[in-house]
Length: 86
Image (cartoon, rainbow, N blue to C red; front, side):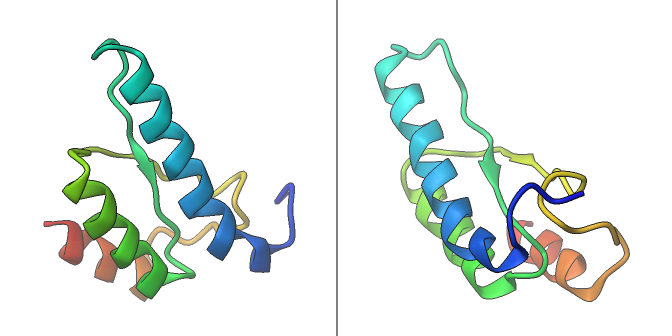
């Protein structure tokens, strides 16, 4: 079950990514961030992939449908995000 209303994830995901980047910068290279994306928010996720890639992030490491209100790995949004990330 989702811990927050699904609508919140469009703003929560970028905040989580900012937090990961901040930790990476302060760790002196000991932490490699993986960003969050969400297939229900394809446009936001594509922006996040681009934005975080420009900051040096090369890992999409948080596909956690069980905590972010999403359960269909075969959905169109997920396919679009994989294509974009490629």
